[in-house]
Amino acid sequence: MRVAAIQALEHHLPERRLTNDELAELYPDWSAQKIFDKTGIRERRVVAPDEFASDLGAAAAEKLLTRTGMDRSSIDLLVYCTQSPDYFLPTTACILQERLGLPTTTAAFDYNLGCSAFPYGLAMIRGLIETGAASTALLVMAETYSRFIHPMDKSVRTLFGDAASAVLVTATEREAPTLGPFVLGTDGKGANNLIVKRGGIRQPIGTEPLVETTDKSGNVRTEANLYMNGPAILEFTIRRIPAVFKELLARAEVTLSDVRWVIMHQANEYMLRYLQKKIGIPDDKFAVHLEHCGNTVSSTIPIVLQHLVKEGQVKRDDLLLTLGFGVGYSWGANLIRWSPDR
Image (tube, rainbow, N blue to C red):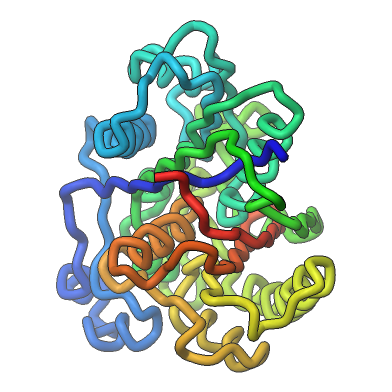
């Protein structure tokens, strides 16, 4: 049967490192060790002033195309996820199509999601490939939250890093699907708990002066900066995500013992370990990999998966469970049967 299968992954990080030591100089009440203890992160990457999400995405895609030797003329689908688009319009995927030298027969579009982007992207691509609308797809995810973050807001600046990832998904013949099932969901009641209020059409920048405010923890921001209600995000996560995990296993008619790796969105190590304990996932099945890149939003899951593959910790026919959750609120989970053709 015709199915969609992941063939390869790549990622790209900007050169600039922002270390805990640098942040500790700005936030005297948080030492470098305290930042690590709270987040599991020692450094994160941030873009240069003249570097943008599409630059990271193009670099990740170029790495992938070069390593795989993929004929660019065979690519007929480019799906790009970002919350840091170059422009309101045109869609950044159109710009990337030309920049990557892909044929004009390539369908290209953007979608706007954060931490749940990977399962959603795979779900869309699987549908397009398995219905015959596409055969060879590039999924590119790129984010530059550093551009939204106030330098004196330690609640988010200690967590987020900029990055991009690229995934090659092609049509192939298998006896069963390699992607899915999927569990996707949304709860827009939490939209204001992770938000950049100013800068869109509803509240554009420039209509009113931006005013800096300081919260009770000493974090400074304006309405053009990223705001995160940490306690509310944590409450949503521990309430919703274990149930999503359970639902996916039930829908697939498998158990945790059948799964080789559980790869969750790398929000921070505290949250990951809490979920691991609450669900009961053994250490040898639970992947954590954010110490040197931070929370890269849409790219956290593919970065971890690429790391595991590169280290030889994923074998052919291994069953992988990925689960993304966050801004929106939005969540997505899926299974991957690892079986690349090459």
